Length: 250
Image (spheres, rainbow, N blue to C red):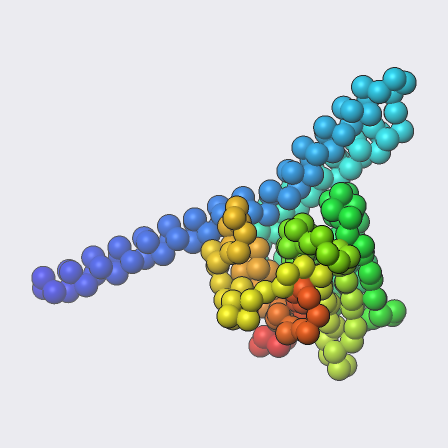
């Protein structure tokens, strides 16, 4: 009887710890995903004040920034919905998605930061790709994470051009490939196998959740995300997503 009670108590403690760990992961994920849009809001607000403070005030630029602020506010709501759906394992809001449009939207969202860091964007998008079916907000978060990581990686590059390559292409007849490649210092070979592990990061202020969440999202869409070894400087990530989600991951 005492042995049975001890085992039951141990199981209850383990269940409680697992729930607390899951809750901590959700909180950390939301914090991680909100950081980028909140930083954008802060930066654009400061810029709008500068334009309004000029003599004469630059009303057109200030109005454009106010429009960006409204979009960023809607983006925060989308982040909360996307992360919530991710941890609930919900298949809600599945819709046909044009991957080329998705890639261009992500680049547009990050355009100010790309411009500030003197990063040249090279897009190689294959025309007339069939749409994939998925959660638009979650897949956009994956691309935003990869682009932000590329920006962070290239901040210290001074001896060559800072180049971001974003491409799409067919993968056989059942999937599409999205690639994001930068000209930064790259990933050390001994760290390639752990880049998608949660709470593993090479950034001084990073949380180590961006790539872990990205992998979770892509796998829930029946696909996979990998680091592609390259002889060129920089990191190269490749996402493969099937046109129609099957019961088994790709």
